Image (cartoon, rainbow, N blue to C red; front, side, top):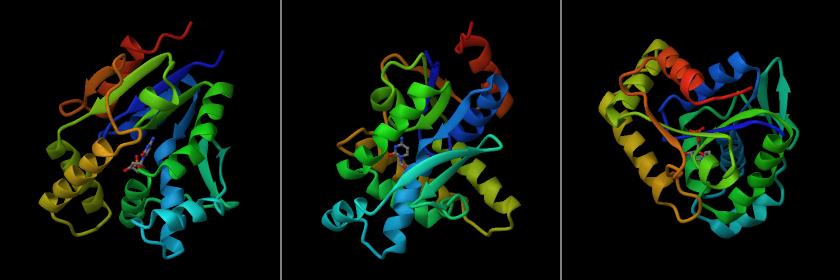
Length: 221
Ligand code: DC
């Protein structure tokens, strides 16, 4: 039986950094489900479809094929055969991903793929609805969060390191708005599963969070 670890939480809580480190340490596959939603967002954006136009999205969804491959332990997202890893990290794509991920047709497109990856592999899977919907029977569920101030500061530092000019207050406002969207949609909203362990990383370093999870939560025999 495959061992499944589900990590959910809001944007900027450090999920992907922590999930990647954990996966490396215990030799699991890291499945980044946000990247799959981003690939769909990218398709909608590239095809000049409004994220509010549910009918157009419903028909576009039939033209979308998402596949996941692993190369040197790195997840590649293939959108209709094209590796789109280099295009999905832009802010605009994140907004499209958040806006379009509320639609049932988008979520059901990805659900089977996510379940299948977890059925056939030991995975650390991160997202918004992994513990609640995708892997309700996961061996370990973690809800990773941090204050919006901390998350904004992390994002600000990241952008400044890349030489991008930005305003920390605008970043925090965007983060709060994204949380609202993800937590208040009707289908599979972001929420802590009842049996998930809450980890607040506001005052913890990445390594502290990784070690805490390894020492206290993941029990592989
Ligand atoms: O984790 P991320 O920022 O890459 O995710 C982008 C968007 O995708 C996020 O705002 C909401 C959506 N998403 C989702 O609805 N369900 C998931 N399991 C993962 C992401």
